[in-house]
Amino acid sequence: MIYFANPGKRFLKNKTTETKIIKDVLVSNKYILGDNVKLFEKNFSKFIGSKYAVGVANATDAIELIMNNHNIKNNDEVITVSHTATGTISAIISCGATPVLNDIDDDYLFECKNLKNLVTKKTKAVVIVHIYGQACDFRSIINFCKKRKILIIEDVSQAHGSKIALKRSGNIGDYGVFSLYPTKNLGALGDGGIITMNSKSNFNKISMLRNYGWDSKNLTKINGRNSRLDELQAGILNFRLKKLDKDNLKRIKIAKLYNLKFKNLPIKLPKIGKNFSNVFHLYVIQTKKRSKLLAYLKKNRIFAGIHYEIPNHLHPAIKGKIRFKNLEKTTNISKNIVSLPIYPELSKNDQLKVINNVLNFFKRT
Ligand SMILES: *Cc1c(COP(=O)(O)O)cnc(C)c1O
Image 1 (spheres, rainbow, N blue to C red):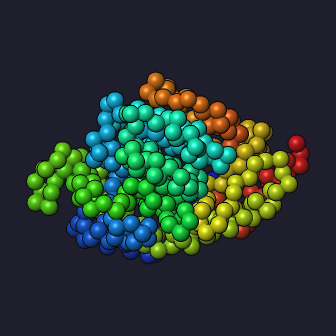
Image 2: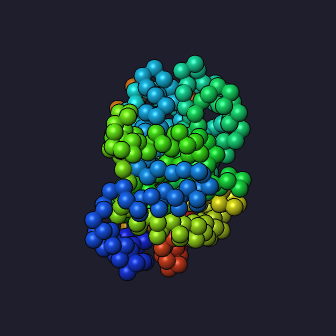
């Protein structure tokens, strides 16, 4: 069986080392907010190039914590895309704010030129999503947002290590938000998340908000909550972070091979880009024959995915809580997108199986 992602293989690849890391944490007597989390926050901010990082429980919480820190609530608006994981949008709704959904460009990314038509007096923040591993180049909107005091949050949950020009995604806006869910480019053994930022006061406040609002003397100075990254995950993540660039290069290599082999097929291929502008969290193509292709692959024990089958603006609990003008591209592509298997541990043999099956399918049809 070949799946579009396979976190088990990541563990098996370094089973001895990772098992030791787990055992060390288990006997350390310190499972929450200890040295591993501190070290991971330090290592991760260094990797991204940001001054600070705060480990949290997941990326959905990360977005909520940022909103809470800036008092974004009822009657406020936050602009983002419909074409993203549910968490991006549910976090905004949970704060009471209204998600204002922008359409995407031909590479599935936030259409920057629409921004000025979506901004109102209520706009408090923009969440840029670096989808499928692609860094969304949003530099053209930075000054516009600064002038209006609109916060820019980068959702880098699918693009850990990607770069815009020479800077890592997550270090260009006011905040970077990263999910560390097991299948992500940097993934834990369960849920996890981390937030990067360059402001010391935001760092201090978010560090408190994730831990009941306590200061260093456990005095509740602001009303917080519990959204912590745990020591076990941080220990594993410290080890996996060292391999992230190399792992991303493996993903890029697979994507290049797929693009080469598929270049004559009637499908839309993803852009490879340069210098880590795409770290291929997912390898997404578009085809009008999606359901037949998926069935054919499944029969041959290859399980492709769809990210995402139903756009967020059409989900029952989201529909009534958003505002948007035009989501034509988002809606159209949702019918044709397919995520083919891609992950650093995907063997050459399995890559060739995927390639041959896709080629055979289009030969037959
Ligand atoms: C995975 C993901 C999330 C949600 O992350 P969690 O850690 O599961 O909360 C948010 N945004 C994007 C773009 C994602 O891919």
